[in-house]
Image (cartoon, rainbow, N blue to C red; front, side):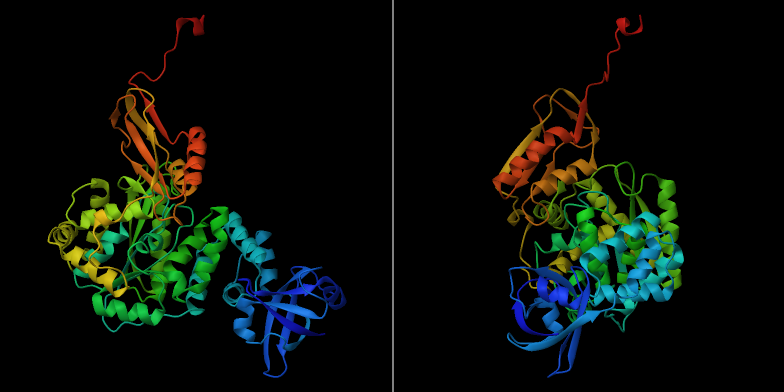
Length: 507
């Protein structure tokens, strides 16, 4: 069937057909068509949306991403015919039924994700099937390699290349803002590509965006790293492991981070940037992704095994995950806290100690410090101001203001203090509930939204003392966070007597 093009500025790789034309071609919503421009010879496959009113019969609406391939003009006549379903859908169905992916099947799926052959619903099915039925180590390796092979890779002439990653699950984990400049200040290269938030209130890329742009090509990432020793950028803009960020897009609304996909996601990015040495932070504890050290050690072995298969040396650190890192959650608040430490602040100790410990492991792995001396070496790079100077170089080369100071970064103008209902001790901080409140307040999209925790677990408080403050850039978001916060009870305060059990209860 020949149809006339109408260009639609919609960020969806597909086409819009009038329902009459769709019936004549025997296609419906979710089916596929092949669109061909006979004048240029360009073709593209697209999934179908239908309408009875937005366009007229004889017209095909071409969405913006599809036209990046077709490059047709408004009014161009194209040939449209039904297309077969991709083989990757059979592979996904097999996984939904409890099967396992082969190497070739994984390549099919990843390539179709990158090329936008699969629809959003089909990618969601893939993510969900992998989450429910899991991926074994062979499947994780297949996914890791396919994710790298369908994108660009960095190739450095100087080695070793160092990288780090935290699997998340703990709010306020802004340690990369300290670790990256510490490692770069030691003379090592660390091309840190980071994700935006999936389940949290701010991914590392969201935080760094407060200080500088984070969207760069792979070539730019390599050049900047070679010039100043390190970068902190968003992996989704680099075309490094592009399938990963597309998968993350569909994990985000479900708030899931499937274990096998998570391992492949982490290791694909490390492999693609040419990392030789990788440090993985695995927070453990209640309300984290990993509930106990035993499960953490199992995950560590899996990371190490995949690293060995790919030729990378991986070491993992199990870290305390039952309380947030530092005292803040949300982009501006976390960046302000991290910059203050780079500028010389010795608190919060949890942020300082965790950052120095993980930096120290990397320095020991790279031979920059003797075994057991990495922490002290990292502390000296921080104390001397070399890490701060390196961070300023990283900010500048990424297009930010290198003179920015912690005091320049402020939270949202709307705030609400949550106060202790009685005298006692803070006996619990629920990470999940705190993240939920930060997100309701607008984090990470509103950089000024988030939480500042004044009393962490074990702190003695008096009735009326502020326990934490909610910040927002928009008043209605603050009101929503307050409303939900009354039901979540993210912080529990108790006196030394937890419960009175009267005599009458037992008689």
